[in-house]
Image 1 (cartoon, rainbow, N blue to C red):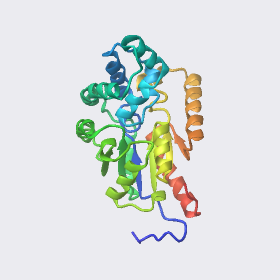
Image 2: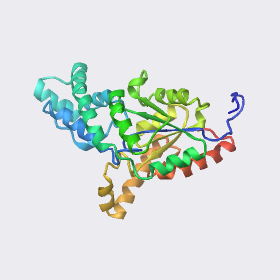
Image 3: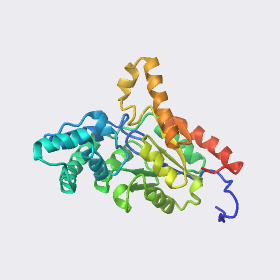
Image 4: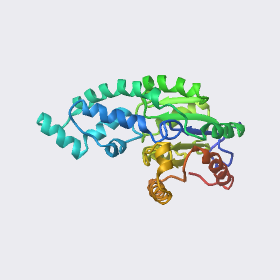
Length: 277
């Protein structure tokens, strides 16, 4: 690639995508992490609803625990049990339970989202490199990555929340992917994920951002549950998620990863005309 000097808009093609994991490329519906957070808090006698567990999804897992501890429903239960609100020591204790639970859960939720491998092939045919970012830590990814590779998914760069100073919504995982993939400028990259935190991460990194609705955390349904949902109800729920993602700043929204190669081509057209994220 020719060296790009920032004295004019970048008008070249997209060089890399940075993909989220659960809900975007694996684990349709982002089911695995939700069950783990519910179990981790249940060990302390605190009930967390699935909708509550999904709320902070996309954060580093310790930050996810911290966010759940701040929920009024959780802090009230903790006060009833312990006589005080949960503090940072409690966060760390719950997180220490969460990490092994997450590791043991991951292998059972590693199936690829339908359409992923054809999308990866389409990206690679166009010379696009494949990076990844995640709220999972390295011990978690040490389980998930081999399972994904067995199924044919081999990204070029894997960056975890534990590899950088801070996880989402900070942009550091995207920056590390850019370094690993040797891609510059950041507008030559697209962040693709299924949570608002994914969107914020990509925006903070100066990237194009695509939000995923149907396979992701916000809909929160397995493939079979999606199939059994009445069509009008499904479309209404997807439309609500799309609105939420657009309001959060997503440049594009797709139902799943299979639609993203076409969106990347549309972004290439924007770049040719000097548009920036």
